[in-house]
Amino acid sequence: MTSEQAPAPRRITLTLRRPWPGWHPRPTVVFAGRGQPAQWGTGTWQLPDGDATISVFLYNRLWRYGEAALELTADARVDAVEYSAPVLPFLPGRLRAVTSA
View: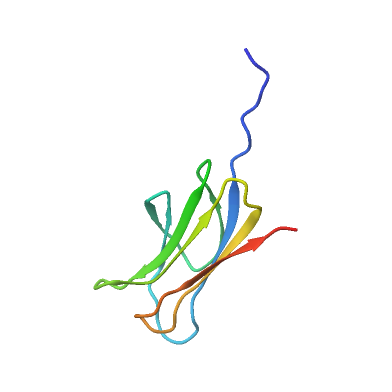
């Protein structure tokens, strides 16, 4: 038996912002190729070990839009990520990392 403990899982805060005019579908968040439906607002997500790609998109029953992706390396000091949806359904979204000091 070893007394070593597994490292705590890596977590980030993900804020999903929608534009104020009109109706927009719920976003889909993708980590390591696996899509998960999400809700607008702020939530905490667990990242897979090592490097991770985060992507977010919207789906309106006809096509995907507002897609944005961000690559996070295992040693990146990122505590939070923020997604901003586009106003028009043919524009890309914005995904940016918020680094810690």
